[in-house]
Image 1 (cartoon, rainbow, N blue to C red):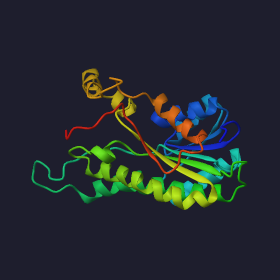
Image 2 (cartoon, rainbow, N blue to C red; image 1 turned 180 degrees about the horizontal axis):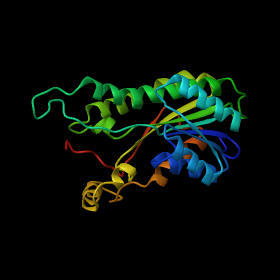
Image 3 (cartoon, rainbow, N blue to C red; image 1 turned 90 degrees about the horizontal axis):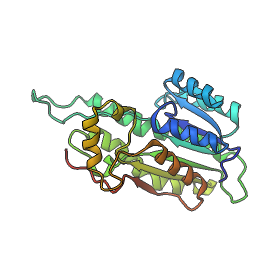
Length: 254
C-alpha cells in the first residue's frame, strides 16, 4: 500500500511509540487521525503536525465508534490502523503480607491491552471491508502492538504478559479471517524501548536495562518502531506475523 493520501488511525498516538508513528505517517503523506484517551495531548500533537485528533477510550465501544466517525469525516475511510494504546503494570501473585493479587488488577490490564485492541480492530476492520479494493486487492492493513513479555514474561508480569500474549495469539486467526476482504494483520512485539515510562527511570537504571540487550546495546528508539510499522503497511506480503523488535533480547526472570 502506498502511504501517500491514505487515511490512517493511530491509537495511543499522543505519546511514545504512537506519537512517533504519527509523525512518520504524516511525513509520508498519510492523512492521520490521532486517537487517544488524553485528548489534550492528542490535539496538541495534531495542531503541531496539521492532522486530526479525537478522544478515544479503546475499552468503550461507543467511544471508539464516535472517534472512528470523526476520523472518517476528517480523512475518509481508514486504510491503515496502528494500535499503540495500552498500559503497563506489574504485581506479584502473592504479596509480602500473604494476600493474593486483586483480580481487578489482572482484569484491568487484560481489558485495556487485549480487549481494547480487539475492540478497535473489529470496528475499524468493518469499515475497511466496506470500502473499494485497491489495485492489488488490498483494502487495509492493521498493526497491533504486543511485547517480548508475551514470550519472556518476568516475575510480576502475569497480567501484562497474558494481555500481550493474547494479542500475539489472535494475530494469525485475525489475518486469516480478514484475508477475504484484503485486510492484513501484523503484530510488532517491542523489547525495551525508551518510552515515557522508561524516561522516568534514573539513568543508571536505563543503562542497566540497556546492558541486557545483545545488540544494539541501548534501549530501542521510538522511530525504529515507527519505521517497522510503516514498512509493514507498504509490504503486501507481510501478513499474519508477529515480529520481535528487540535487539535479540530475551528477558530474564527478574
